[in-house]
Length: 351
Image (cartoon, rainbow, N blue to C red; front, side, top):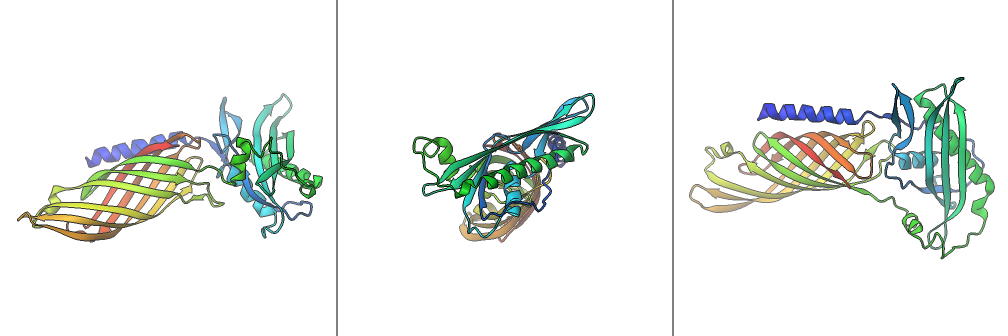
């Protein structure tokens, strides 16, 4: 059983590595020379299913995708937050990315990049947010920096749109809520909530430990990543384990039924396009029902802790697959099931 488990784990890791072949870029933070402004960015909205892809490039006679690390929403938001006032005293704006696409343009003379970036700016009003400006950056630039040129070009386009918006002084103008337009349509309702819908990871795991084996079902509420690439999902776990018969040898007991819940922290750190390191620290609280050799039943309070360390593939698309492999360690005050060390293979869907 142990050898089969190791072989299966290695095959899963190879599959994860194969799925992760994408080029990834990350914004370089720089201080921008912007016109004076008191506005601050409250949120960035990007509604496409693929929230990371910003374009394509040619490589070995095939087209590969270019992904923005941490996702487009988070990368743009953190970059703007870095360059705009942080005291939240001025007017709040919301930025919606309507189009973003960067592609290589090859000619006989030189290689260049073409970018199309369309942004919509929204201003907070008495009932939510109203659209007040649309900025577009559509340009070709000679590219001698390879993949790095994509990141630079996106920053140039974002900065140009931001400068144009500030220069129009659209924030100073009085906005009128059009109840037949954006403020009553589904687009406005999604934007006025000031939240990007969070995705759900629904997974099941096969668990193999030294003292017990079984399965668990997990539900993660998948949030946007912070500036460091960390995600802190809300998580619910359900476990069903069968204690190995050898654990009852010389114990004086025939059966041990344990029911417990887990509560704690499970965090994901983005390592590459769709690969994450997972670390969890969970508290175990429950009870056990013991039956001894005289068929007498007793009950005990069970408390303990569980830690897991794993590598996961999470599809960057809004709907996709999830694979993972992790090690876990448990310590409990149970009479029979006192501790365990093992592995689990996890698979599921991102919804």
